[in-house]
Amino acid sequence: MKRRTLYVVLMVCCIVALCACSSGSSRQKKAAAPAAPAFTLDKAYHALLVEDVEMVVSLRGHYPLAAGQLEAAMLAQLQTKSAFTEVGKARAVALTADTLIVDANISDMRIVSGAARFWGGAMAGSSYINVHLELKDAVSGQVLHTKELSSANNAFGAAWTGGSTDKSLPGDMGRITAEYIYSVMPK
Image 1 (cartoon, helix red, strand yellow):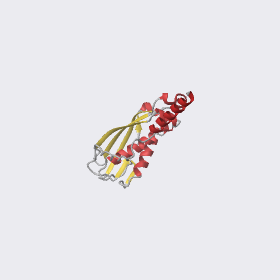
Image 2 (spheres, rainbow, N blue to C red):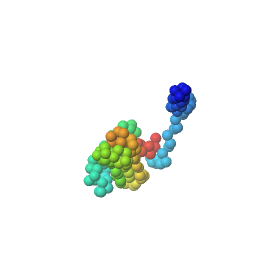
Image 3 (tube, rainbow, N blue to C red):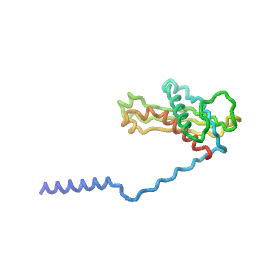
Image 4 (cartoon, rainbow, N blue to C red):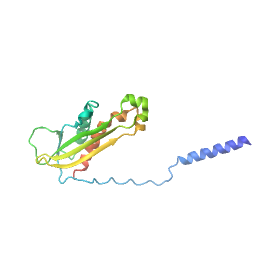
């Protein structure tokens, strides 16, 4: 009798576990359309010049490569967009009326070290980065838009990946910044 009760309890547990794994609905849900940006520039710019990415002095010693990684990823992502005829570093050349200057500065960041991630795992906390972005008209020098962008990783995900999401955060933020710049351009 005890054995039969054990089998019944085991079968009920298996059925409950399998039912918990079901999707709940056979109908597919329609994906929501992406939200329109809250801000759009007044005119389209076809050339983008990116200023050197700077960071707060107190962070330079801790993260010497972060600004370069963010800048390189932002430039690479902007160059994939067909909306821009020229994307490059800001330089002393004759500027046209359809040129936008991008000025991005890292205002705060924390990247968990590999040793802390190895020994502490998720308890080492999450990594984050904050970027102050200014978009300026090249001819007039007028600031057209400013935005604070930020990104953070999940501490448990970073622990699971051995810290790779910590190390890729500046590059990821560069791609996020580029996508934001593209989203505020009128189409």
